[in-house]
Structure formats: structure tokens, C-alpha cells
Image 1: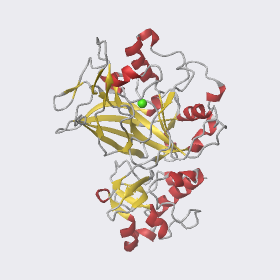
Image 2 (image 1 turned 90 degrees about the horizontal axis):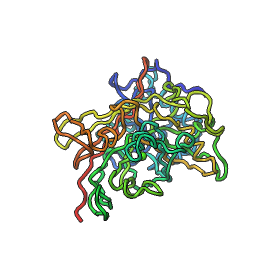
Image 3 (image 1 turned 30 degrees about the horizontal axis):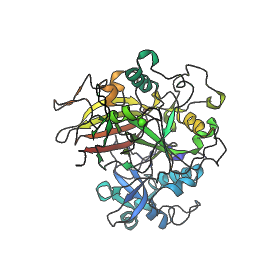
Image 4 (image 1 turned 60 degrees about the horizontal axis):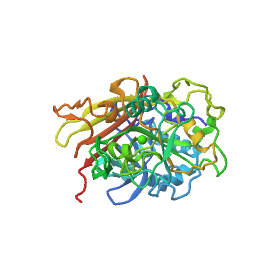
Length: 426
Ligand code: CA
């Protein structure tokens, strides 16, 4: 089925800025609370939030097989469950409704009043109920940097790394949407030179620049997803900040991996940009440095050219950019991650979330965490207000941004913005 929603020539009758992350070619999906306290599924064009529940009730999706209440829900899980064909039909129809040449809604003021909201009239929610959350470790640069710091240059990459998209099962209860604050966690650490662990607020809270993909119901228990079919089951992507407490992590991670250092908060951007919208930005990924097992070998382009940026804003000060990276740097792509995740028969459900792992690029200004940017705190970063950071301070706000751009169109993700509050008093 053609993705007519992606037509770069299409213009909308809505007023949009030329550099918006959300032109009519984007059409992401999210969930928001309206000024009347109604929760609904919506999309966004420019700075308008569009109530898909109201559009459906007013008959704008006629001819597409949808249940009456599909958009009158507080999560996208059921809609995602309907599968790729439905996502495409709905995106194509939304593009048509807001096309400059289509008068149906454009010239119906009464309908527009029910359907359109400005962004300050809505409050974004988590777009899906995340049943299961998995985090990978798929940037070779990141794995090499961290490995070098902890084990030295010669043992930086573990022997399995070039063979397996390494990952672990995370925790979904503490996934929060952009705009919700996180808190500095308390925990157990073993300071350098100490012989006994100490308990206190983490001193080394860090961000991790990641993206996460959201799946649909993909397979029944016992059946793997072939690598070349994996994209059929990926609904879309969000920006993802996998908050990490490095001092807690260092003490607890052997032998089973991260635990309390990672599950105190993980932030996502609220609009899921569909894989369909990202089609014009498919690129070749890094060449395998070692032959991969057949179930991980794929055909065609499976990586995406998505510019990623990280900013830090002190409590009273302007934001400073601290990193510029790109999703295309990932050594293992999403298709390989999903194929590997299910090769043992593990089943994946609608609304599951898979983090990429920290995305570091090849140059020091493209590293995806403070741990790497400041090299364990040895090289502090200077912000525009003159203050220095080794890790994240209390009341700092960390902002992730992401966008794709070519000569025709810009498809963006907006922001994933989280303020770090001081540790609670104990
Ligand atoms: Ca992570």
C-alpha cells in the first residue's frame, strides 16, 4: 500500500512554521488530556494537537475498518495492535483531511473547534502502556568507550559483542513522558579506595542519549521473527533518556548487569514518529566487522539517518548543547535487535519498548553520556553560563532533540525534557 502521507509536495491548510518538526508529512501518534479533562489519542501538525477521537466521531475515517472507540483510549496499544495496514490507512487519511486543497474540515468551523487544540491547551501523556521494556547496548563507540574506562583499551569490547546485540530486560513502571521530573536516587556505592560500601544520594547521575522503538504484537511464544520481516512489527520511535546513576551502577552491575542504577526513571518523548514517516531517511548501517550468524544477516537498508542532540539547562540559565550524535551510528540495527530478541521464541506484545542503548558517535562531541563526554569526570564540560559539569546537577534539565532532514522535508521528534530534582530527604 503506498504511503501517500509522505508526499513531500503536500501542503497543509494549518498554519505551520517552515522548520517545524511536525510538518504534514510526519503525522506522529500520541495521547493527550484536553482542556475539558478528556483523554484522547491524537496527532500533531505544526503546533496543533489534533483529536483523533473527535475526528472519528465526526465521520472522517469512514471506509477504514476501525472500532468506534479505537481513539477514545488512554493508550495507543489497541490501535498499534491493529497492524501496519491500519496505521498506513489512518496516516494517509489524516494527510488527506489536512491537505491544503481539501475543504471538508478546513471550511467547517464547528468541526475545527472540536478537533484542533493549541499545544498549551493539552497535556501530553505516556503514549503507550509499556508492558515490557528491553534495553540494548548497540553502539560500538559507546561500548568501546565504557569498556576502555572500566577494563582498559585491550579488553574494551567483550568477546560476545560483535556476535550478539547485547541487551537486558529493564523496568517499565518508571518510564515517564517528557515534562515529568526525575529524582536523584539514593543507593549503595563503593567509593574509590573504600573498603565498605556507603549509602547516600547518587553523586554521579547521568543521561543516556537513546532512541526506543515501540512494537506491535509480533509473534506467538516459541516463534522467532525473521530479521527481514522485523520492520513490519515496529510501529515507530521516540527519543529516550535512560537516566543512569554511574556510582550505583559500578558497584552493583557484576554479575547480572544494571539494576537500581537504571530503573529510577527513564524519559521518552511523547509523540511516536512512525517507521513509515521515516522511510525517506533509510541508510546503510556500519559494515559488520565480523561475519554474523545467518539469523542476524539482513538485506537492504535497515538504519535511519536521525540527527540527535543533547542540551543541559541549569535551573536559571540558557540551555547549552553538549552532544550531537546520530541514530545511524548504531552497529546493530532495530531489525537485528528484534530478530535476536525473539530467536529463542520470546514473544513481543503491542506497546513493548526497546531502547537502542546509548548512541555515541565517532568523535568526542558526539558521545551520548556525560560519562563519556567528560571521560568519567576528568574533563568537565563548560556550559554557556560559565558553570562546569562532570555529571548532572540537581535542578538541571536535560533535553534530547531529534530530527531527520533532506532537501524536501524535515521529520522531527520534538523534545524529551526532564528536570532532575534533588534526592528526597531521608
Ligand atoms: Ca541504556
